[in-house]
Image (cartoon, rainbow, N blue to C red; front, side, top):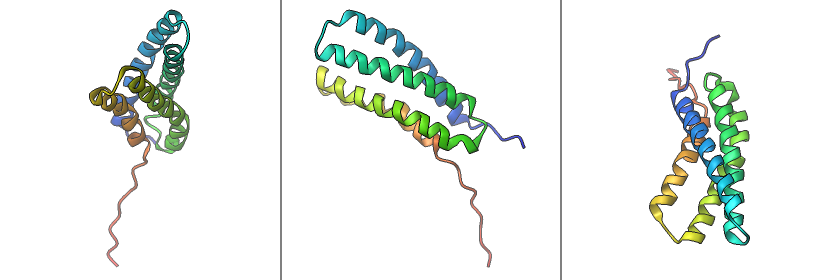
Length: 127
């Protein structure tokens, strides 16, 4: 049976692929430029997060048409989302509190988790 494509999953997956690829390049540059201490730790967390986001975005995009794979996508994406949250917290600690930056860094993981929630069929009981 052919399912309709989940547009939220598709768009979120594509944004995650783009963001993960961009973050991977920036993370490699940041690790190469950091000597030690907290900036190196932050760069490594960013690099790990970007690899996870890239992988989760690819899996999420490939399974956008398969609602039965929502639990699998959620299991694959949760570590990436957690590392993204950890990276945002470390960035807040290193650079200072910036609420706009924090909200923007939580937007895509929020969409990811929202897209993983399977839509339940609503039926009306007439009896």
